[in-house]
Length: 64
Image 1 (tube, rainbow, N blue to C red):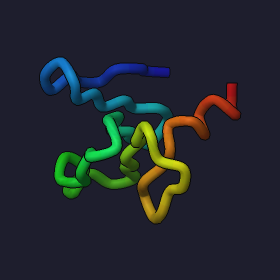
Image 2: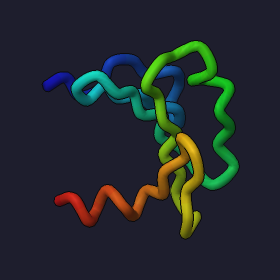
Image 3: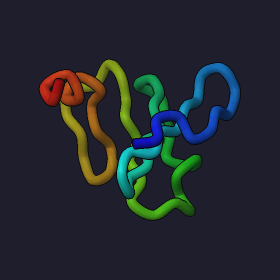
Image 4: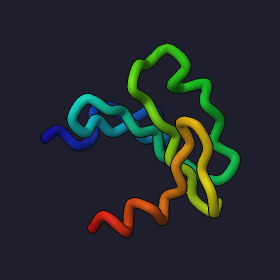
């Protein structure tokens, strides 16, 4: 399983897990980095609920 596939600066990180791509960022993270990527999700910190392809970071802690 590949973890970090590319880093676009110090803050933005994209991870490839299986066939899915995850863009990790803070509450103000937008979806412009993943607009052309299939099976992509934005993982945001400091939000309680997700919608569509936005997932709260805390939900990954439930999978550990």
